[in-house]
Length: 335
Image: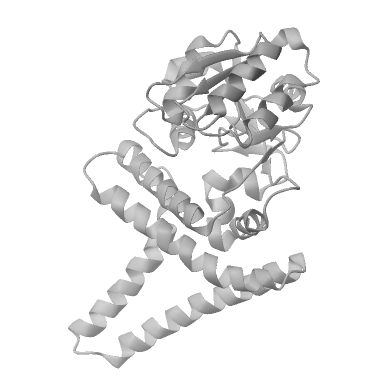
């Protein structure tokens, strides 16, 4: 099977060379795949690095993405792809040597239009990136297996899932053409929106732990919380476009709304102590959950600092997510 690899990049000078080198050195036959890189008008040295790589590897296909966003970049890649299958990877990810080989084998063994696998932390990741990865692997941060957008992280087992992110996903090109390309109105979460349409149309996605990439994470807490906020906005946009496809998208919001109902009910009833007591009990349970989960993560990884990071990051994740969902649902536009 011929596979077109599509890499949509913007300002990835730090990682793009390592990414492309990993794709050029696959165990899969060189005449059975191509590499398409679509640059979203990078303002750092990304484009210059890509041109340098092309001089040494003329088969590398480069395109410009005037719309700049990742969805448009991936669509350019799909439309120019020669392969019957299109494999997506991010510019800050590095593919295993047998990445394409395992993709091909998996397609041959399962009934699915798309396959992919985990995006693992690189061994040389910054400490805060590793911390974020460990915290996000917790069900308290991500919702666990109830949340389709993190099934690729939570499970080391092979099986059918509802979502695989485009940092490590291969799809049949004809299926994309049939259900529609990436929605370019989505600044974030284009892959989740596309996968939602795939699943709604009755197609299957398959996760294999053998299809591996390493993926560099955010290195600053500020950037990470903004990423969570944008993810939540994307899920709100999916709800507005497709309806409530998964109630877990609103799970953090339910808790917040419940606490607000208790608070305002107590005020409305003249400061009823019963409602305030229930409110305090709920807050206490929430705090204890964070404390115990932070202790568990710190103990599991043998790093006491993770306890303090857990106390900080869990509330930030929940607040950022809830804010993103509310803003996304209340604004008029889908995104």
